Image: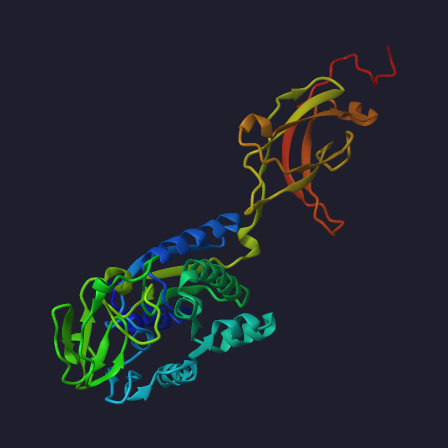
Length: 414
């Protein structure tokens, strides 16, 4: 199972080693089940145009599962530390609080990396965004709808998750508009949500003396007292430098904190808080060579013995997002290019699933000069009609023997 603290090394760096640009979209408080649903919605969008692939695996967030530590863990780093004044996480002795500081940390590892809020990213115009992407190697895009709403109005958590899905899909489309190709979508942590008031029996009685940070789901501090409803960890246990200790409630128990809601919480060690999604999205570059005209074949005929003949053309595949229609001009010509029949213009654009419904028949009538070519080979010619051009290059042709009977409609002698 991938771990958040190794995310940059194991996921981002391989792209950079191949000189590929990478976007990291970090949605605050996106738990694994939400990631699965988001992946499904991305793929649903994809079915319309088949522009990208999306897969979802799971990753472990850091513990305690709260924003400061989760955001720091996803950055490149040699060590993480929490000092003894507050819960700000330092990345290689640099504060990781806020997007501006995270941008500095990214740039200390790669001068062409950057961090940006999702609203600012979505506000870029096309040319500005493409210039930004062109000069950047790694772009971290921070999105915070779920945690922001959960902390502010926790009963709207589900609405915030749904809104986050829409915003993230907009970000994906914006990345595509800016010629980006490779993305990871992940989170700093998950969350617990219980759609009912917390029972008194679910609150832990914990002494908070010596705490520098008290949260409903964890306490950070020194010389903390252990209890029956909490587990105690050292910084070394959690991969965090410093002398602090950490108390994490067991199960879904909560610590009483004045003024805080109790339905939407995170910071603890439940699977819903710790297991986060890691969605990989790869955008397929649209190239004209990848969009082809539908293929049309001439159904062979042997000899022609009358002044009118039925011919059939078969559209061998259906028209869809990757196969576009083709317009052809159809006629008979002599071997040296003289027009011998009427000429049909037809667009082959069938979406019929059944093969037999994609066959088109034409009744061709020869001109009076056809008698001059009797007992010779002539050609059934199809020419491609190109929009905006007068040129009609030969698409396909079929050579056939002309063997008119002695009496025919154009013969002047009886």
